[in-house]
Length: 114
Image (tube, rainbow, N blue to C red):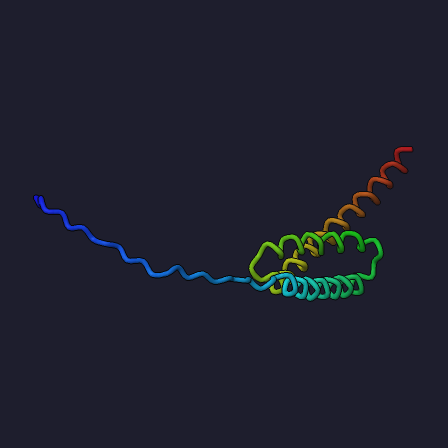
């Protein structure tokens, strides 16, 4: 066990100060959102032209909005969005056609019962 104490004298240099001004992320984000919106509108327009049915307008646009919300939560939304959009549109079209079929069948049943 040491009984002797060694005292060290601290020597401090003069304090250095500098200002850090981070670059604004707004212009980049705005550009990114503009590109994303352009891609979204283009894919929606293509899909609506391909389906040709005005009844599918709302489901396709809803699918685009759902895919947009999911894509923005990824690291690369512009890359992920087209695949998500396709999946969502397929599901939306399938659901809309199913609902139309059920509606038509139920109208037939109501007509037969009356």
